[in-house]
Amino acid sequence: MADSFIAEARREQIIKACIDTLEEIGYANISLTKIARKAKISTGLISYHFSDKADLINHTLIYLISKQLDFISEKVVHKNTATEQLLAFIDSSLIYQETNPNNNIALIEIVFNAQTPDKVAYYRIPDEEEDHLYTMLKDILIEGKRNKEFTRDFDTDVVAIMIQGAISESMLKSMNRFTFDYRAELNKMVMNMIK
Amino acid sequence: MADSFIAEARREQIIKACIDTLEEIGYANISLTKIARKAKISTGLISYHFSDKADLINHTLIYLISKQLDFISEKVVHKNTATEQLLAFIDSSLIYQETNPNNNIALIEIVFNAQTPDKVAYYRIPDEEEDHLYTMLKDILIEGKRNKEFTRDFDTDVVAIMIQGAISESMLKSMNRFTFDYRAELNKMVMNMIK
DNA sequence: ATAATTTTTGATTAAACAATCAAAAATTTA
DNA sequence: TAAATTTTTGATTGTTTAATCAAAAATTAT
Image (spheres, each protein chain N blue to C red):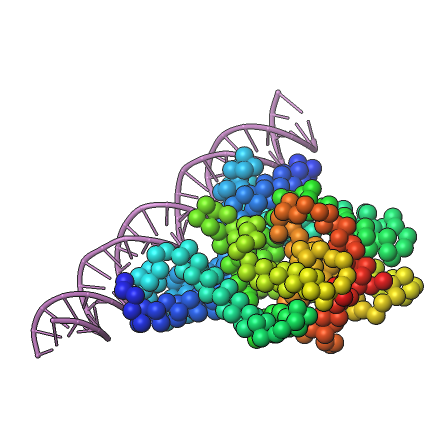
């Protein structure tokens, strides 16, 4: 296998087929045969571009995480105050989930199923350093406390966890069930906690 | 198969072996052979007591949900005010997770992997009625608003989702990372939102 | 104690799977 | 164009799996 443009395009095609297949049938039912069928290529071609199934899943995970991180940080980076950054973080997180449902489902399927080479599921790895979204959110909260935008006494870890929980839960409980503006209400509750 | 006491005890033994096996190797790697090995019985015996693998997983899910619900509602039911009930709900949820880690891991493994007969993953079913814990939490919030214990203007769905999110996220981010009292801090933040 | 019933075993079967590979096709280089 | 390289196919191999079943063991009823 060479690192050509063709190879790179093919790898992305396979990754996208992997994402859509995960969304359709879930991690427990996925196989290289089904991913190949979705991508309309032969099974051997997947093995040619990825060393094995775990390698494909790993690259898919990296792809999904970076897409989400890029989208959210792009919205946050243009804001000047911690308050604006926090609202941008929440809004863009909810928007990303609404506009990329397949990516979100695939991310959940991988995180709650795939395992590292030493057989530990990703969702059970307690590595805070590696969770860039969590770090971004916590840094915003720390900066807001430091410069006195957020005047209440609160723990940045707990509030960060609550916000992340509210964002991920909101996707699981299908949004369309709510008639009101979940986004606005969530923003209000967060401000109650910190300002 | 008869509905004898022996059969019932055997079924629970198999369910418990299923839970421990799920915790050890995860849903993606589980098989009837491995569950049988953990329970120190033959594979055929599982098929004798459960119609198929999906049936065993289903019974395990029901077992896990009812254990958790029983534990939490037992703590809540003795409290008289909505405030006390809410704190009991949060505390007992966190305590249950800390004291029954295997049950929690197994529950996550099933909810994020197992599928209904029509191939829909449990975590993607938007059935609010069936989520008794969510209903209990929301009812507490509604009652607190009604009797003016909770004086702030808030949406019960959003706050219920935030609390559930904070509880489930707290288990994923390994608790022992925090030096402070997560429970007390979470209680404080919730009160900031509603009182 | 004997018969009837329930429970358990472990071998067997057929299906699905990941990974390999020789050969063919397509593309790039000379 | 011709040779070299990269890309792709699809058949094959060896495992693992869920489920079945005949026979044995254990339990219960008569």
